[in-house]
Length: 402
Image 1 (cartoon, rainbow, N blue to C red):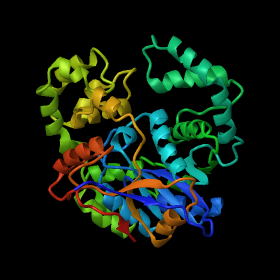
Image 2: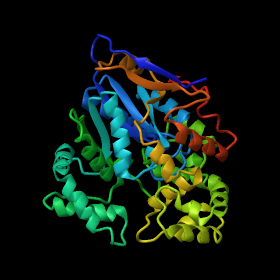
Image 3: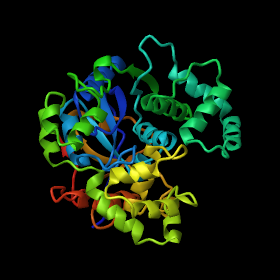
Image 4: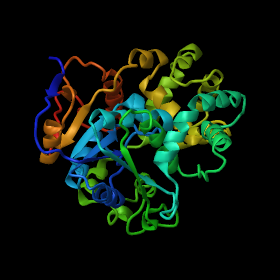
């Protein structure tokens, strides 16, 4: 059986104003409810479209709970349509992550992109203007970046140097991952002939991460730490009851450490070098260190350097775990498929009534043969190894209707 590919035909009808969110919901919490409601209100939108990472997320971690459960909860709290971001995009640095996620929203003809930022609410920073200015300087910026390649610094540090060289008059804060992603979204969005309107939603203080404890609403980072420590009772006031129930069977990197260790130890140096973004020399380091540690946290501590940040290492280890090789990415260098995970009645109406110049292909169900989803299906099979509670993630699964 082939995967089901449908075509939403252009139909006449009332136009639905849409707002797009780029999310992980790892896990879905009270701050996300605020984000959804505020995005819809500020964009004056009729429908909320979320492009959501699948079972492996941008920081190079397996998601606490699977994509279907996260999609289900988000649909109950204001999202109308959930589209999956495939693994070769979801586990990437900010630039590539933004390129893939923004392209999906563009395909769907979304009107406004809303994202969270740690830039203060009274800041005059204009993301749209910044994106347009970067577009005019892109070639020169690429050339300047090449001159920094010899630096033994991380990619974020190098990009900070590039931006500050070309835009010294703009106050840029690169200490916030949310702000860095916002800059990447703005730059990618500016490349389109009909860019989306951008609204940056300042994060409220009550949602900020607080290492000393959890507040009424808090960040996914703080919640994840409590879950990994086994302190689930400490988060019950900060997330919806549906998500709390799902988190009883959550997974994290330690659950996959034995599989990662086997993958590394059973590979030759030549085989390790074929892994995406594996730089020559690091294959020796990772194989040496894996023999000296007993868990994933120890491995990260052993591998971290000035040049290799924790997130970069985690992404590289995720590529190792799922066997993501350079040649596979080259073969899959194609248009990102529109994989629908779920929708509300309003979301389905949006898909049916959205005015398009041509028909819009989508993947709604996967059978024995797939096109363009091979890497995600492979990653999902490995994700299932983390717990016997994780159900089949793709074969015969159909979009959730909420």
